[in-house]
Image (cartoon, rainbow, N blue to C red):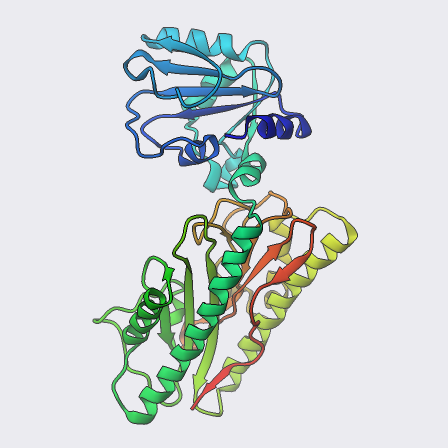
Length: 393
C-alpha cells in the first residue's frame, strides 16, 4: 500500500480522509488499492480509515482480528454492533469530508461498492461522504512504462492475428470449406494461445445482422458459414501472459467481395469520422492544458453519429477503461449508459469504439482503437487505425 501517496492525493483533493469498508469480499477495489489478499475469508465487517494526515486506524471484529494485520496503523476490536458503531464514530472524529467507494446517483457504478445503509451510518455521524472515483482511478488505473510496453507488444501480435483471421475467411469462401463464425473465433483464440496471449470469453465474429447484437457470441449452434456478399465484424481482445500486462482490444470490419453495399459504406464512414472526432477532442484538450472528462468525449463522438441521422442506432457508450482487465476501473468514455464525470489523466488507457447497428438492414459497423495518455500528457494510439473496409477476396 502506498500510504504516503494516498495521503498526498487526499490533500490535493481537499479530502480529509478515505474510509475503506468491506463485508464478504464485496469491494475488491479496496483489496487491490490496499495491497491485500483478495481471496481470504471475510465473514465480518472491517473498516480501514486513512486520514489525510496522521496514522491510519483498523477496525476489525474479534472473530477476524488479524484481517488487516498486513496494513499499518492502530488496531481496534469490536464485538457487538453497538461497539462497532461507537468505535467507528470515535475513529472518524469531528465532522469532515470522507471519501468512500460510492458514486452520487450511481453515475459511476464501477466504484459504487458501499451499501446505502453504511452511507447512512457515516452520514449520521455528521460527515460528508464524497466519491472516491478519482482516487480509485489514480491507484487502480494508472499504467506505468512497463505496462504500456506490454499493451503495445500485445497489439502487434493481435493485429497480425486479426489480419490472418480475415485471410482465413477469404480462403474459406474461395475453397468452399464451410468455415463458420465460430470456427474463426476459435482460430483467433488458438492463435492467442500459441502466441503467448491470454483472454476470456469467446471473440465476437459476426456476419450481416449478427453483430447488431453488440456482444454477439458465436456458438456451434448459432454460427453461420461465410459467403460472398457478407459483411463481417471481428472484435478481439487479449494481453500478454505475464503479470501486470495490459489488455489490447480492437474491432475491425470487412466485406466479402469487392462492392460493399452503399448503406454499409455510409455507416462505416460515419463511425470512422466519429472515432476521429473523439480522439481530436482529447488531443485538443490536452494540447491546451484543459480538463477533459469521459462524458464530453462521448458527446463529441456521438454527436457525429447523431448528425448523420443514426443516433438511435449507436446503442452503447463510446469506450471503456482498459487495464489488467479488458474493462478496467478508470474513466470510461460515456454519457449514455452513465454520466462519466471522471477526468482523463496521464497514464490511463481506454477504447474509442463507436458503432451503428441496423438490424432491419442486416448490417452493423464498429471501429475500435485503444488510446493511451502518456505520463507527459501525449495522446497516442498504438497500432493501425482502420480507415477503409477490408475487402475479403
